[in-house]
Image (cartoon, rainbow, N blue to C red; front, side, top):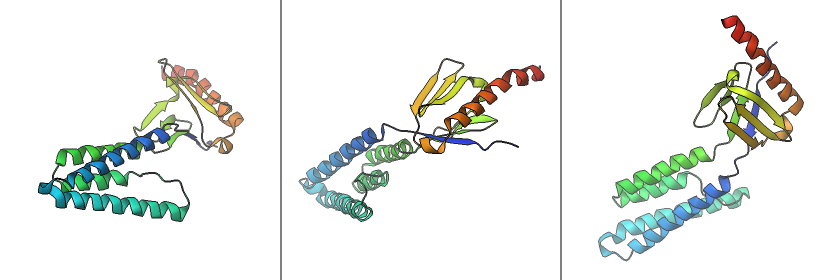
Length: 189
């Protein structure tokens, strides 16, 4: 009977930094839009950009207050800012902000690893699958996952879903997968 795969979500400690950086980008854009109000040649596109940005900010504030969550800027704010730069006919800035929005979206994704009998799969961008033969050791201890690769790389991070994963069962499973490797390699020869 095949074992169910283990799904482990790693903590992403950099989310707060990413969100602070996003606030900085958004505020810089708002200041530029305010500054554009003083340029008579583009006062109307500048006012439209500022209006769209403020309207989106008020919408986000309303949604956050309604759901009683903490206020943060989501990735759609980048797309709103990119649209404002398109209105201002600055397409390169719009493209850069759009790309930042895509990167921000991927940076907020949970770091999910799936361990099954065939491979260890990293399910978040950039996706990767590692065979068990690429590891010297795989251990979960005190809510810290350690992936020791044969090429001297090491991933060691705290897990987020500690209560849903049994350390004993996971370590027994990983040990079993790692010990099966020499016999599998011998039968392939």
